[in-house]
Length: 348
Ligand code: GLA
Image (cartoon, rainbow, N blue to C red; front, side, top):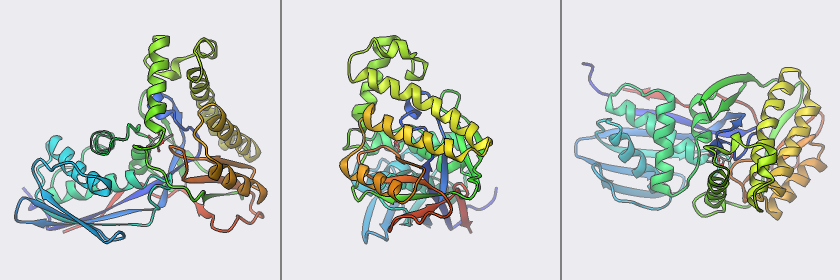
């Protein structure tokens, strides 16, 4: 047996979802990619069964027992949750000193949470000297951190995008089969930017969990396992707002397939139309937009974006724009392109 390392470090990227929003927990399709911004976790072995954690960007600390850590709020919930859930999966963790730092804005819809969970999981598994679980198992473990420890009933989109990301590619994810297929992201001279709406969000506290409950209720009434199985005719038998939520899911799945085809055919104008149609559906049928988000989308379109839309859970955060090469993005916009998925930085 090899000696477990004294230290381990890992990086988890944030993600941008090109299209396919609020489809993951509905057994549908999405097309995200990992970005180059993310969270880095450095872990060092301690001899006693304690965890000391520091969020260096926030200047905050936490300390808790390794076994059965008590619940906590904010970033501490993610760390305690990762430590508890990894042990629950049979990883024999040592006591550790953990340092967390990141470049992805918190509450900005770019999956700072998944980036942190994923980096924590990879660094701690390496520090334990344990074999790395497969990426799907890791995504599920990270998702349990959100549902059990943070109280956000999120799906697997963010974790899979962060863990499976690939340079120059988006990932077509089928949430029914959990099949992940890289799709080359050639934008024919266009570029993608994110623009902050200036409004922060937290899934646990926003309308996110309520949307999930509405989808479950729609499934129950239709006698289906997932809303992606519903037909438009069935959707129209439901009362408002369940009919609108269901119509969004059905149409959004179709747009993901069309976006994959538009990319394959290098049809950028079509991709732009699909992004705009996705935004309209999320605003009018899913009702997760806000005035600040609408303003950010309008700024992108005024700058020449051929497609712009809200991304992530909604109720604030960043919006995404697809701009022709000669269009200057509005001030504050940041270019995004697909970067590598989560990885170990070192262990020794
Ligand atoms: C958040 C959640 C994801 C997904 C998106 C909406 O990012 O964490 O699971 O549901 O919202 O597509």
